[in-house]
Image (cartoon, rainbow over all chains, first blue to last red):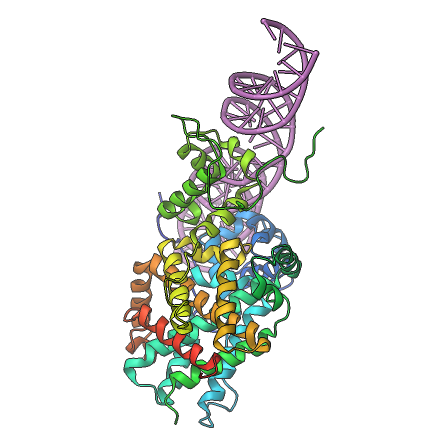
Length: 231
Length: 231
DNA sequence: GATTGACTCGTACAACGTACGATGCGATTG
DNA sequence: CAATCGCATCGTACGTTGTACGAGTCAATC
């Protein structure tokens, strides 16, 4: 009997280099981790977290359901890979070179949020999943820029996590509320029924009138002002 | 054929008043929404989100699996109710009366985070679930205090959501990382292997050395300072 | 031709949420 | 007293899921 506990003779868990298919012989596209992940992202975009089933994924790939398991340990890993693949970051354009640390951080974090909002399922996945190379890359960049901007070694972790917390909270909230605008409307209407109990937030139309992007940027600015010693 | 689409002749979705059992005849505890929710919380605490199965929940209640469905529409509602039940907030002690808005907000938000960390599953549930009365109550309180502290009507929603975002991000992150200390260790060790690629966060021991509570308070302070006009 | 290793997939199973309908029971009504 | 009715319970069964298992295909190597 062959090895069974761990992963068999498969590819490494995280693609080592940039995504490249090893052998694309000719007409029929071969099954590969890259194709599986790409199709999983498509499926997730189209149907949400609950819509990703191994059988359906296999169907879209023109393969049998069990064929996937040669390339992937289990469904969880599909989630891990799909999540990280969506969080790739193609460096800051000139900002970081120009020494504009604030611009560099804003750019990266806004891109982070935007990337996740482009794939709303990622927001609900990120918290419980492993830290893939793209996530780690962003954290590394964040740490490097903050450090260069004057944040002391002792405060670095705190600063990184504060920003992470804020970005994740904003993104997760936005993604989930966005998914169900009707729910928000229904919620606000339910609120109207109970306006006696919740007068303030009912009057402010908390669940409806909101400039999410503006709120995000404003709060991010406040945090950065506090975290980084003023030049 | 009887009505089928909606909920049958059941209790209202959210318990209207404080939790009270209607009729607790004597020896045998009768099945009730209150008992179901309480037991669900127990089960969730013990086994996590994935551990809550309708059959197991029924077992713990000494009932048949399908008996639950008289009191509850579906499993989702069990999650909704369990979540909200854990977020009850017994007002601010004296702070709010004393006009100490900062203390009142800090107290409520730290209690919010603490309540969720006491039941880590709640952190992964909150984003996608309905806003129950306890959550709405906290938001209402937050809005009222902020308003009283001088935040203008036009900025109120932004302030509330900024704080919500931050608290949720911090709590969700903390809860999920806390769930798997080994994972963090493993992650940091994997980092060590790749320290060439991630030197900054590796050196800072980002995944290990961290004062979560301190970071939370500090970031919260920064946000409040920025959001509320300084007296 | 025989062997090997990479890869595919049909079948099967266990676990889950829950639809359906039968059953028990206390209160109400005749 | 018996008949009726609404509330509440639960056994059975179905469809859907992830995936274990092992048989199958095919190209490269000896």
